[in-house]
Amino acid sequence: MTVAIYLDRLRPAGASLRAMALLLLLLAAFFISARGFSSILLLDNIRQAAPLGVVVAGQALVLMMGRLDLSVGATASMANIVLCSIFNSDMANLVPAVTATLAAGALVGLANGIMSTKLRIPAFLATLASSLIIAGLVVFFTNGSPRGAVPPAFRVITEGWLFGVAPYSALIWLVLLVALLLLVHFTMLGRKMILSGANVVAARHSGIPSDGLIILSFVLCSVLASIGGILLSAITGMASIGVGNNFTLDSIAAAVIGGALFAGGVFLPLGAMAGALILFFVQSLLYVLALPPAAKFIVQGLIIILALALANLKQERSQ
Amino acid sequence: MQPRGSVRPNLMLGLPALLLALAIGAIATTWSGDFISAGNLGNLVNRVLPLAIAALGEAVVLFAGRIDLSVGSVISLSTAILGVTSAQLGWLSIPLVILAGLACGAFNAAGVILLRINPLIMTLATSAVVKGIALLLLPSPGGEVDYGFYDAFYGQDQFFGWPLLLIACAFAAAFAIFGFTHFGRSIYALGSDGRAAFANGVNVPGIDLSVFLISGGLAAVAGLAVGIKILSGDPLIGDSFTLDAIAAAVLGGVALQGGRGSVFGVLAGAIALVLIGNAFNLLELNTNLQQIAKGLIFVAALMLFMRGRSRSLA
Image (tube, rainbow over all chains, first blue to last red; front, side):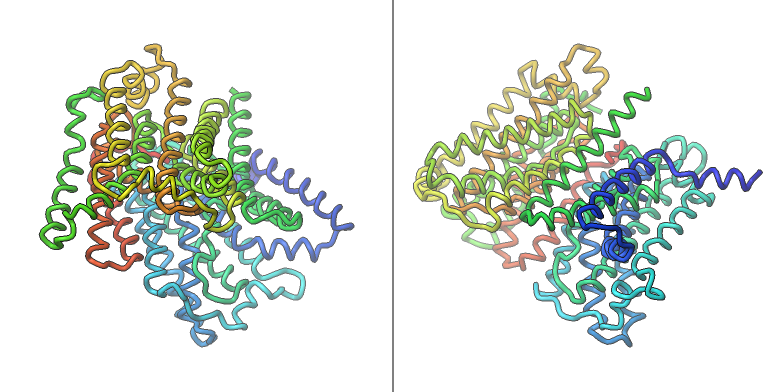
C-alpha cells in the first residue's frame, strides 16, 4: 500500500512529459542532421549541458517556493573565481578549494533568503542587488584580472568518463537531481516546502516554518549554482570574470520549459533536466548555424515568452 | 494609513529622499568646494537627466502595480540605434529611437495583456530580446553620434539648459497627469486593487498598454540623453539602469506593490542616487566599491520601505 503511494509520486507530471517529448523531437532532428544516432555524441552533449543542468535544478527549487533567483549567474561566476584562486593549479588544495567555493555559495544563498523573508524584500530585487554586489566584490578582489586555474587532474570531473561509458559530470547531475527528487517528494521537509510554495498562508496556519524553508531553498539554489560554477570551471580550466553570467536567464528559460510555474508549488526534476538539455541543444544549433552571439539573447527571451504563453493557454483550456 | 492614490499625502512620500539628497549635498559641499561650483551643478543635471526620465517611466509602471525590467536594455538599444543611424539620418534618428522604445513597450504590453505572462518575467524576457537586438546592431561600443546633437542639447554643460528644462517639463506633465486626470487616477486605482478597479470600469488592458508604452518611450528618451552625452552607441551601457531606476523610485517612496508614490518623490530619489555616485567620485572611491555600495544602499532602501508590507512579488 505505502509502496504504491510512493511509486505514484515517481510518475512524471504532464509538463515533464511534454518537455521530454519536445526534447526527443529536437534530438531526432539533431541526429538526422548528424546522419545517424550515436550514443557517444548524445552523452558528450549531456556532459557539456551538465553545468547548466545543475543550476537549473536550483532555480527550479526556488521557483517552487514562488520566488525567483536572479543571482545564480553571478554566484556561478564567483564560484569559478574562488575555486581557481584557491586551487592555484595544485591538486593538494582540492578540499579547501571546493569547501570554500561551496561555503561562499551557501553564504550568498543565506543572504538572499534572509533578504527575501526576514527583510521582506521581493526576491527578484534582493537577488538582483546581490548579483550586483557579488560581481563588484569579484572585480574588486581580483583587480579585474583573476589568477589561478584548476589542476588538470581535477578536470576529470567534466572530461572523464566512468568505465568509458558515462561522463562523470552527467552522473553528478543525475545524482543531484535524484537527491532533490527524494528531498522534495519523499521527505516531510520536502512536502512542507511544496506546501509553503503553493500557499504560504495555508502553510503558516498549519504551523510550517515557511521563512526557514524559503531560506533553505535559496541556500540550496546558491550551492547548486556554485556546483554548476565548479563544473564549468572544470570545462574552461581557468579563472575568468563573468564566466557563468548567462546562467541567470538560461536557468529561468530552462526551468520554464521544464514546466516550472512562477506561482510556485511545482517541482519537476525530470522537466528541469529536459529543459536544460533543450536549451543546450537549441544553443548548439545557433552555434552550428553560425549566428552571431547576440542571437542567443533573443532566443533566450523568446523561449521564456513562448513557454509561458503555452503554459497559460493550457491552463485556460483546463478551466 | 493614508488613503492610497490621493494626491496631497503622496507629496510627503518623497520627503526621505529629498532630505537624503539635501544631506549628501550639504556634506559634499562642506567637504569639497568644487561641489557647488557651476561646472559640477551642470554636470549633475546632465547625470540626473537619464536616470530621472528612466525612473519616471519605471514609476508609472510601478504605480499600476506592474514592473518593467527592460528599461536598461531599451536604453542600450536606443544608444545603439543612435550610434548606427545618426550619421546617415541626422535628426530623423531621434524619432526612430523613440519609435523603437515604444515598440519595446508594446511588446511588453502584448505579453502581459494577450499572453497573460507575469509582467516581471515578460519584461525580463523582453530585456534579453532587446539586448540581443542591440548587440546585433552594434556588437561592441562604437558608432558615432553627430557632435551637433551634443552642442545643441548639452551646450556648455551649464545648469540652466535644455536638460533642466526637459526634466522640469517631464515631471510637471507627470504631476499634472497623476494629480488631476482620470487617466492618472485609473493607474493608481489599478495598482491599489486590480479587481476593484476593473469592477469600477477601469479599462485594465488599456492602462496596461499605456504604462508600458510610457515606460518604453521614456526609456528611449533616457537612452537618447545617454547616447548624445557619450557621443556613441554602447549595447551594454543601459544594464545598470534597470536597477537604478527601480532604486530611485523606491527611494522616492513608490510602493512596489502599486498604487502609491509621487512623481516628485521619484525625482528626489533619482537626484539622491546621482548625488551618492557624485560624492563617491569626489571621495575617489574605487568604481567596484561604488557598485558594491550601490547594491547595499538599494537593499537598505528596500528594507526601510518594504517594512510591514508582506505581499510577495515573485
